[in-house]
Length: 246
Length: 184
Image 1 (tube, rainbow over the protein chains, first blue to last red):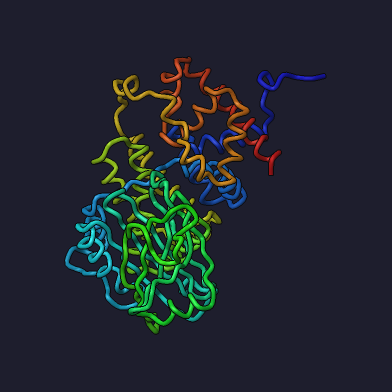
Image 2: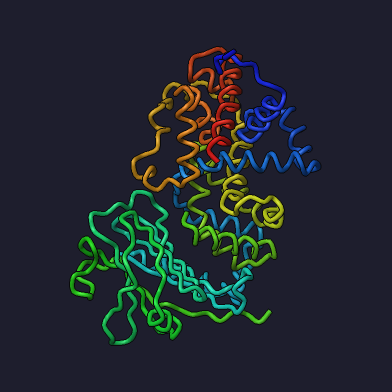
């Protein structure tokens, strides 16, 4: 006997699942929501089901388009959490962030800026494993790139925080040291995203410090000459910051 | 978010759990725009979004340790914190029936081609399963998740009685779960 699915009465298990989905979607009535919240906090089996349901819906998170918050928001957060008079601690792994963010703001007045944060630490398995963060802000497209570098894996990734950054050209990432010609680190996708695994030469170059990173717009397939030919969107020093010994 | 960005956010969040102020600043650099996007989309109001954004980051600072025990990927945990804070604010607002007609646009919920190109496998799988539902039901589920609509608002938007919307959506959710489990 076949039953049309639309007329099928939900079984009890299904009903529970639907209740959990309603809870996660925030559709449950306020009283029900409170009960579920308390149960999530105290009942691990229930909490696991909630987590599973949450994970299913979080596939929709991509649809939340990133929007840059006004700078006053972070200041207000810092004031509320740490007190207005307390400046960012300048010690530790991320000590130079404030400086670099400031340099980004100053540079944003120009056409484009690139600020690079680098952190190196010995243990690859710990949260302090070597990695680098770079923020590239381009005035022309009002876009933001975040460049991430894991020194241990030689893995370099560029994330575009704006989905609108489609380009007719290819983005090419360059490393420049001293008066030497720029060394191509690879091409990014048209949407400004990229995952690059660096070869030994490039890793050594980045590890040596005193390196400038730059992104240029190049014809499809990358620069035909091996040197940047298109407009440079942003460039800046690659700074290696030693970890705090704590 | 790429795998590497996700990994970075995971690392930063675990440092924030240890009250590392500099990691908190870095996390804000990397994830701030995403979470502000969540607040803006749900609240549809700049001033409210800015206020809730503050609440979100205070919660992140205070509750980062619980992210590890939640088992959720760091990025999903952060979005959940932002989404819940924004919906708390939405629910605390007095019902505003007036904006429903002017704002209402099913098309605005559709992913743009660019977003489609960037969609993760999970997203595609979810989209495939949402496609198996009637359009109105799929839109209602998206509206609940992405715009924080209540049953009441969804019923008004889709011009059906409240109980019909409840029944629709519950059946839709059950069908959606069955589809996703069938795919994985």
